[in-house]
Length: 313
Image (cartoon, rainbow, N blue to C red; front, side, top):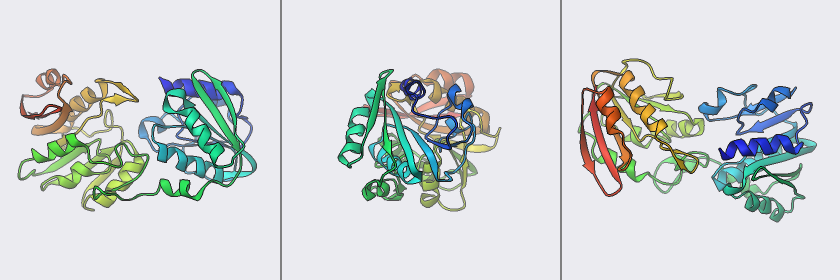
């Protein structure tokens, strides 16, 4: 995976001193982290956080701030600014990023801001950074949550933060007039589906804490909010309904595994007779899993891009 290459590049570059007080933002586990003596890891994605030592909120100042870059420009610049602010005088910030995410472009962003950048290129990635300096104020503002043009509170760092997913819109249009009982929204994001559930008590399950914090502003307070890995953290036979737009990408690559796991875990979490409604890109072959784990299923609607499937436990 590109992120693994970027991690290898970071630790092979020699920029990080394991003896220095260090913060690693958007951290992922790498065996080299075991040698760090004073390490804080900041990670809001549950899928990665559970594998990391020293997960916490930042407690500056730090001699070194490390950052694993993401696909989102606004999130990256926001975290650049935060890391620079969290450094002690004389401290250093280092970003590691796969080339295909635009590492060279972000290095130029730091230079355009007047920062003295040092860069290393290896493992088809770049490790680049600078000494403590004042970051542009507009970078800090980029990551703040706010109500967007689509009407929902969202922020960079959340998947699809600046739009309403068209597949989710189609799914909502197929909801019944009422969903009675306990309703789970799996992979809830900033809460679009949960906010549209007609009736019922809604339970949101989301691995990205930034998204879940936004959902608290978009969904009635009577809902429950769970920072969770949907593929392992759901209760058994707890719900009458499940609604979901399962993820099917890992980075830029398409992957069926996560979507299929959502479907099988939903079956375990539903009560007998409970129902799942999901949206999928029309070419994704989820029907075999519905045959295997559900009593019956039907295709509710199909467009050129999407299909809505409903199944009964």
